[in-house]
Image (cartoon, rainbow, N blue to C red; front, top):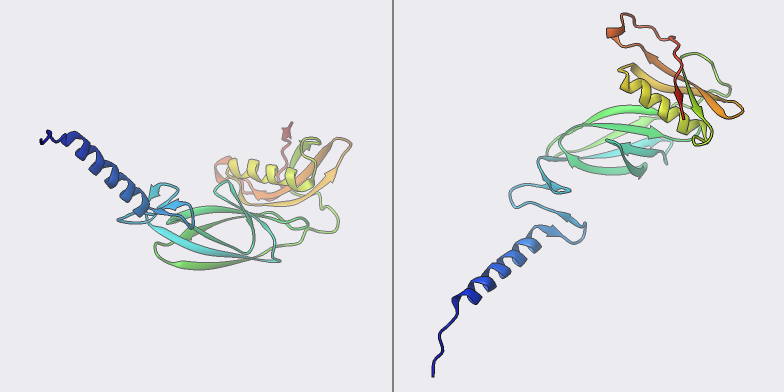
Length: 195
């Protein structure tokens, strides 16, 4: 006695096997990331991929790439080809904000020498104030000041120093006014408050 064969179960089985094979083919269990059949993927986005080794002098600086904390230097970063923003912070050193380009298929090395903060605060530059708390360290207020002046399109922005008040930080940020403001002065003063 021969029963009728149900082809729908066969079709479902073939589809499931295809999905499972494709999923394992595109997944690298060692990194937990997807890899593409026709190109690399970084966090699910296909595109050209490059690598950069980031070194700092001194080592152990905190690295932030495109707004994401990456850990401390030395660090190897793999990402989509193109321009990326790097913020380097280390206690006792000026905050550095730089841009670097990743090139498809190439591994580059970038070495950044950090500038030590002066022993005393030279109260020159753009003025920025943060409340303490929540900004309990000069570095946290300095990062905020650098970000604010960068967002206002100042050029050559860097952290100078901060002076502690009773419940705030008065920070001084180096930077040139944007050209659209009509001047290009290195010692402009503006007060910003952040709470």
